[in-house]
Amino acid sequence: MSIVLHGVPVGAGIAIGRAHLVVRGMDEVPHYDLDERELAADVLRYEQAIKATRRQLEQLRNNIPENAPAELGAFISLHLMLLSDVTLSREPIDLMRAQYINAEWALKLQADRLAEQFDAIDDDYLRERKQDMLQVVERIYKNLRGLETELEIVEDGEDDIILLAHDLAPADTVYFKNSQIAAFVTDVGGQTSHTAILGRSLDMPSVIALGHARDLVREDEWVIVDGTAGVLIVAPDDVVLAEYRQRMRAYRSHKRQLGKLKKTAATTQDGINIEMLCNIEGSEDIRALHNLGADGVGLLRSEFAYLNRDNLPDEEELFQLYADLVKKLKGKPLTIRTVDLGVDKNPRWFDHHQALNPALGLTGIRLCLAEPVMFRTQMRAILRASALGPVKMMWPMIASLEELQRCHMHLQTARQQLREREQAFDEHMPVGMMVEIPSAALTIATLIKHVDFLSIGTNDLIQYTLAVDRGDESVNYLYQPHHPAVLKLVQHVLRTGDKAQKPVSVCGEMAGDERYTRLLLGMGLRRFSMNVNNVLAVKNRIIQSDVDTLEGAVQRMVRNDSPEKAAAMLKKLNQTEAVSL
Ligand code: PEP
Ligand code: MG
Image (cartoon, rainbow, N blue to C red; front, side, top):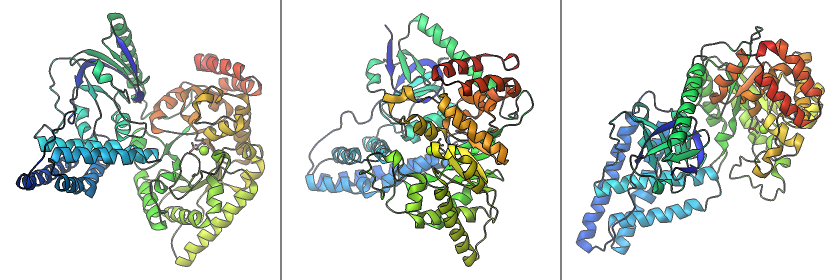
């Protein structure tokens, strides 16, 4: 009988193959007492295990294949840092000496202690570093025991291999790309765990956080991984197998087709060129951006440099970060959004716990205006980067003209400070604002006079228009991008931008969701900014659309007041062939 297990989807796609269970290294840790003489020898054994672990990780880091994910090196470096930390390099030895116990047991005690400390951390990202620590511990342990440290996959037969592991360390995935491994699943992991990030970058069907799935699977058994749905099917019967083989073929063929679009221009059937921009958070996605033929960065979420630290980044550090991005973009534009902190992304120094409703509190531009030194520091770094290439500055969460004027005042000061220091910047660097609050959308005719461009942040615009928390699953069904109230606001902003002859883009998730591509095209959008993973699917929709024939249907959709009717109309818009709409 087949079993269906649900986890967190990571890498999309479907794989069918034979299960290979990765043995856990630390299931039964030996525990014994030592006398003085044995203790000295065991301490030496521990020190050698640390050295061996360092050598292996360094070797892996120095031999990363070309086609491996870009972030792999950084992740292995993090493991090397964890290894050098006293908590792993010295404290287990202190425990051995204090309790006269063997090295393996001291390592286990220390790992349990550290795991507890990680579990108590509030910050999701930092808490998930527990897995990194445990992965390093496991490697030290294997070296202590003389066990094989590298993942051993016997590649024989024709069938694909599906890896089932308790967890996978970045180092385990180094050679995945050239192997017979078609998919992997793990017991543990969260959305921002390194395993999840690598799963996405490896472009391999993968599911994490499956609990104790491995207990239900036998070595060599047939399994199906549906990485899009986050499902593992154990021992599928013939009917299920046939169904998934068909789905796998369809998915692969669709992906191959999309892959061919990399060099194709995003031009509609009636010859309108669409600008394809990307939303990025750091430099990791820039290689993909170039590969996909995207036109530049429409949104750099700059918060990453402010998180997971106790202090604020200084101007030089920020400048270096932006300068590196400008260089890597090779002449393509970089739109840097000034920090948008305070709701889901919180620096440690910002205590928002008293806020009853953080999304309506001191967030986005409000927080920047309340912290002018921080704001101007970032502005100076952005201005300096503008001397090196096409950089634009964008302000988030603007709700009123007064806020916009205050932003301009700080910008003038930042410019003046640089002039006094005789530091170069582009005097004409474009400055724009995000439209993500209904009050801004409704008064956009006035606000637009004070900026060079607009970008509609539909994620927040939907949240604030419909009064639906974008992160609350219990009201997810009310989060409707196609709601006529949202569409009327988006349309109004696009038309106002057109009249003022100022560029308007959409950088919320709506722009990266192919279900809304035709709707946005029909409303007049010509600049889409999205996650790199969505570029080809959206481009595919664009080249299959005829804007001229879309406009009538889209106008009827915007004028209509019923979300249900809008949903039905949207479906029709996507079903119909572009030319015969
Ligand atoms: C948005 O609100 O649509 C947006 C792009 O900003 P963020 O998702 O970072 O809030
Ligand atoms: Mg937003």
